[in-house]
Each structure stands twice: as C-alpha cells, then as structure tokens.
Image (tube, rainbow, N blue to C red; front, side):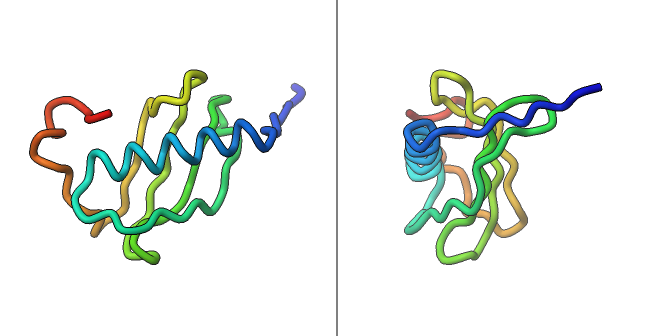
Length: 92
C-alpha cells in the first residue's frame, strides 16, 4: 500500500487560512485573534487547518473543502460560544 501525502502550495494554504479565520470570526463570540499552527492532509485525504484563538485560549481543527468552505470543525474545551444567530445555520 503506498501513501501519498499531498503538500499544499502557498496560495492554497493562504486561501484555507483566510477561510478558517473568516468562519471563526463570523460564527463565534469574541474571537480576537486566530493563529494557524499547521496545514496538512488528513488521513481521509482532506485539507486540515489546526490552530488556536485568542492567544492560545482554545484550539480548533478545521476540515476545508476544495471550494474553501469549512466541511467540519473540532473545537477544544473553553472555545468561545457560537453566536446566537449562527447556531442553526453557519454564518458566512
């Protein structure tokens, strides 16, 4: 079984980073800063962005689709609350 790890170019990384930052700021209360720690190919083959918000207060791991929308997001304990208007449907 061969494994091919995709490496992403700078443009892809930049677009994915911006998409994640916008999503977090649009959907969660009190996001003052977003720091991306790693961008990599997940075991399932998707682009994943890991990082933290508000100077390391809480962590996230976001799956980014080919069109730079978020397909999934995992949040650590202590992550800021989702905005009320974004609870039933994600805000853009």
